[in-house]
Length: 152
Image (cartoon, rainbow, N blue to C red; front, side, top):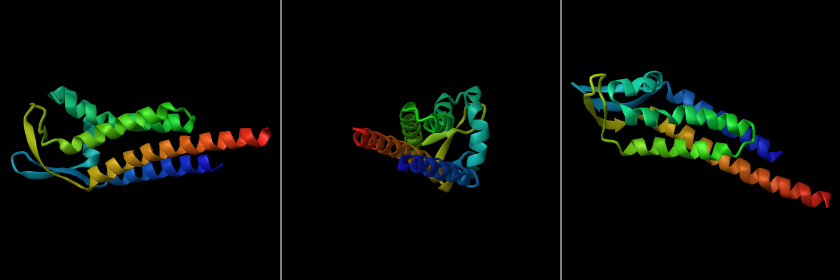
């Protein structure tokens, strides 16, 4: 089945890009001097951003568990995978419009100087998942129609 191959390639490429992104810097900020923050750091600390007043940062971070849930739904051939991957894509893309981010637990903001390779690889992993999920369900539907027509 071509749809199963699409599903497998989509999940594998998306996860590969995600794991590679964790080895890179995500953003460069100016907070008491210029510094780069690693993607892995944001993955590990992002879930606690609300504790420092970073509600919006927390919402963006939710793209990660949404992608995981989309992968689980895609594995089960559940169309909800489309919804979860689309929401994750919107959240990830929306971050590119930010100019400031939480700089410390005190609630201080840091200016975003640039988005780095880690962010773009993370974004690409989510977009790959979203496009692949759409392709999977399109091809799966086509295969079901062809199967029904061959029975008749």
